[in-house]
Amino acid sequence: MRAAVDGTRSVLLVCLGNICRSPMAEGVLRARAADVGLALHIDSAGTAGYHIGQPPDARAIRVARAHGTPIDQQRARQVDRRDFERFDLILAADASNLRDLQALRPASATARVALLLEWAGLGEGGEVPDPYYGRIEDFEQVHALLDRACRRITARLLGVAECEGFADAGSQHGSW
Ligand code: 4NP
Image (cartoon, rainbow, N blue to C red):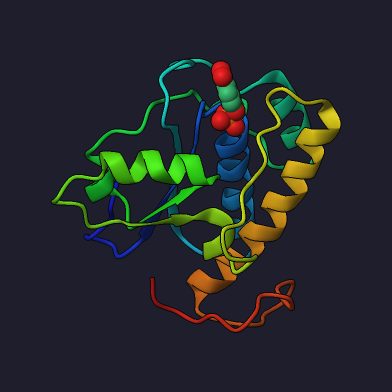
């Protein structure tokens, strides 16, 4: 997945089950990157294997579709040690996901591993709340948070603090 040949950067979005937060994050990041013409390889995975092969949670599919960031075609998979060399950047939804990733990280890892909201500049230690045991409103709130974060992630990857639609992108530039 790491695209050394064409220089396209790659981002893996990670949560626990890969049926709620990270599939929505994948759909949103795909849409926001497309908005600004940023080429990115994007995928998502779960630290746990509970839902391997399953589509996203029906509530996540519904909310994502309503916001134009469809995720129907996604299927859950578990994080693989090889992901740490395949991807440039691995973003965890919460601190528990980050700990699990750090425990799995092989010595040969080249990926940068971080909290999604932190990397987006939305606060140190910030976590994407798990809506799995919640209501549809919780999925809406998580989608809105992910949209805000992905606008900033896209802006950071573009290496700009401000561009059309990214006026709140902060002052983080460029490098991983
Ligand atoms: P996700 O949410 O990590 O955002 O996909 C969850 C999905 C499934 C479970 C927990 C969280 N589960 O326990 O099955």
